[in-house]
Structures are given as C-alpha cells and as structure tokens.
Length: 158
Image (cartoon, rainbow, N blue to C red; front, side):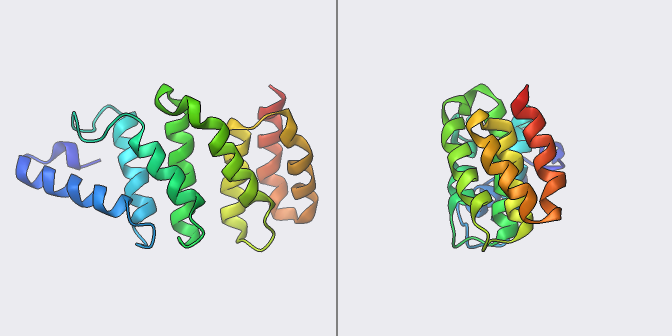
C-alpha cells in the first residue's frame, strides 16, 4: 500500500494509471494483482478521489474472473477482488451474477483446482441454499475440495 504514501503526486498518478491499465488487460499476468490492489485501496479508503466510478473495480474483477482466456492466477485474484467489492454496497446488486460466474467455474472439472477453490469460496460468500448440492458434489470429487467446500457450506447454512 505504498502508493498513497508516495510524496510525488506525478508519480502517484502514474502508478495509479498503470494499475488501471493493467486491471483492464486480462491477458496480462499482472491484471489480477492490479485489480486486487485497487480493490484493497478502495476498501481501505486510500483510492484517490474520483479515480474510478463506484463499482468499476468490482465490475472489472467480475469481467476478468469470467474471462476464460485469462490465466488461472489472474482469475483467482479477480475472484478475491469480487468478494472484496461484493461485500460492500457498491456491488451488492451484482452478487447474484458473481455467484453465477463462480458456479460455472466451480463445476467445471477441466479447470485448475486453485481456480475452482476460489470460485467455491465466492459461492460461500454470495451463494444460497440452492448451492448446497453443487458444493457437496464437488467435495466428494477430490479431497482437495473438502477444505474449500466445508466453510462455504457452513456460511450458506447461516
């Protein structure tokens, strides 16, 4: 979080511009980190005023998470930013879409386990009772999923 502490406004603006550019490029290996970093800044109230429109970071994160051409690492970071932004009021109306995207990815056995686990976590945050069957079926598919599905199922029960 060193950008807000940068004394030079010119350098700060250049760094923020670079992060914005990266966050819009799902084919860049740093896109996920950029959108997650912007999400962290926004959550902590350190995003420069007027830098992005309300909801833009969450929208970008959702677009990247859903982008099958983006690398798994980029999509995982984007899911974390979706959860971070979806918890706030700015993206509250997009929670069903975030959960729907996560369901598709979690159910796709051809995708990498870490990406599917990020999707499972997202379902645990924004899914509903209708996701119980999906999560239970994923849990028995591979023991690596048990640790991810258990807290998601517990959260859905609350």
